[in-house]
Length: 219
Image 1 (cartoon, helix red, strand yellow):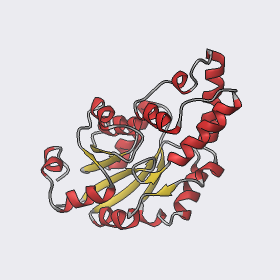
Image 2 (cartoon, rainbow, N blue to C red):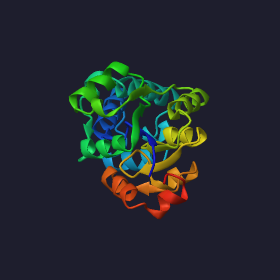
Image 3 (cartoon, rainbow, N blue to C red):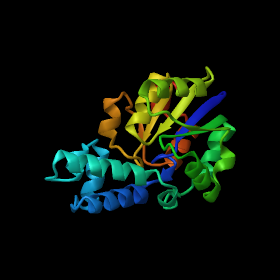
Image 4 (tube, rainbow, N blue to C red):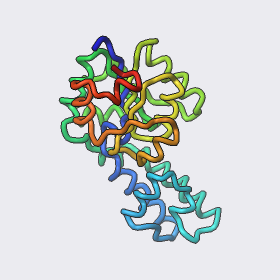
């Protein structure tokens, strides 16, 4: 198949971050004095890209802003990152990807120490040639991902819309993971029309030269 650079997104693609996202939401919505949606509805809203206001029904703008600030602060805290767990088979699948060339990890979380601690705890750090915290600025995020490709054919494994969009703009061949924080419909809206149920399904597709991966230029 030839040399392949792979960039795996931490959030959703490699690691189940749902317990952390739910905990941060619950703390924040309780702190501002509202109940918020049920857990199932929270996930539906999150995966469709809902606004902060939809997470705090009937709240006025100041309370919504307070909620969002509190949630984001807790979302990237090291103690809540201890809730993160890798998806089943992550180590074996990362080894497959690494054997194909170079494997990197990228994350939207600005807490570099928390990210490193999680990768160490989950025993996944050794599979990555580079660990990259992506910038908040969208244009700079594209530049960083382009630098990570090293000018080689690159597969980006996305769990979130911001990462998928930036990777697509950076010239990567992007696939979405249904374990991530977006529905396939949302991935399609940023130009990603190939999605997989799991890393197992992705590595199986690579091994059998899946026509969809050939179509988007991965193989």
